[in-house]
Image (tube, rainbow over all chains, first blue to last red):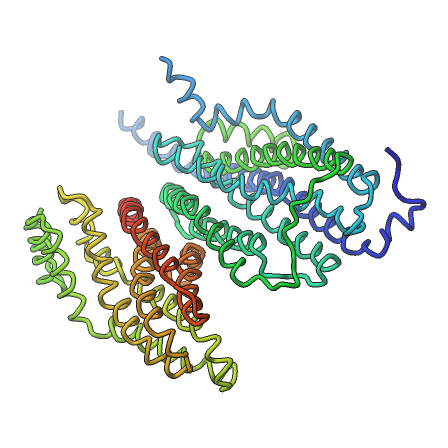
Length: 79
Length: 254
Length: 246
């Protein structure tokens, strides 16, 4: 088994078929890479969304705390 | 008792936790095989006597076409399992398989067209195999469009599973009829179907690429399934913990 | 159950009662008769697909030129594709009314399998679209300069083929009935499944025009119809249950 082309230029040209071969390989690789990367991107987006939500929840809890404490205090006062 | 493993297999959480151990093996082996196959096919396989170097496109065209078809059956079988045994995970795999299959069908169509130009002098011919591939692409798009149209995930799962099954019943009929149609209209000048034997020196890289594509498919399917699981189990405790952890790890909160 | 629908009473109330009685009477033919009566009441649903068929075919010579020879060569394909589109477009409404007024749910709760109800609805759909299309097709063949050898195979193939189209399309209609705007989606999911019928439909006419026997193609169309009438209502019934769950 040996390398079929004399030079890099010959490898790229492929006897005139180069553009076709390389276009096919490049597009195929691009699609495969896109397939492999999309789940990671989706996960990243989800993590971002999640941390935003956690922050929102925390802020809401902090805002709700004084209001929630009020009636409790009243109940105790009545006792 | 004997069915316990089956039910455990149906649990998305179990799958998510187990599959993280498979991922590096699947991905690593698949990518290595693909790389070896590409270099071998592009540089070391001998030039074809008739087609010249353009035949090297075969090394991605053929495996992609294989998996495009196999992917449809995988999708439909997963859908059937989901419909029959109401297995959640199976539906998720089915939903993940649809875009992957569509992408592979696209690759095989595109590479086929590019291969056609230097070989037959035209990008597109309504050849039996190309036409069947195009229809397969439409079938995939139909499943994806239908599953995207529902607002409730469960309805989307069941509806697209049913459509995938109907498609599976139809695929052999479509293939046969397109084949018949093509023999009817085949122009005498174009001889596209060559049943020539392939030399081992060209065949081994092809086998390598096919194996690589299968492993890559399994890897990508697992990846997509995992991210869909996270998306769906969004509200469950284990996902929240998991996402919380990773968001801490990336340092985006606190 | 029956009193419930009567109480809800809506525009199609009378029809619903008849249909329920028919379903209770468990006769497939009673159901068929009722559905047909209901279909015949809304004239637009019958006329519009036919008008579409004729109008679009009239556009064709305007688009591709009036050359009689070319039109004659394209006629089988054009007529068949238009018949396919007309069937597809009319199919969207197949289950819609019944889904919206709740009678589809009633039908699905009947002891009698949903299979026969679907079959009855599809049969009626074919009677009001496929059959008129087939009857009308010689006229369009004439306008497109179709050679005389093509008329009989065209009508027979359309009779057999549109029935299969109605059956296959019913699956898509049932899958999309719960969606708000299913029109294009329905075309997208069903079109690929129509391919074999289209191929053998035009193949029948083409064989006749080329002077061959076309009985083999008709046999294939009949086989497709047999398989479709066995399987498609099953799939559609399953799809209806999924859509009702939505």
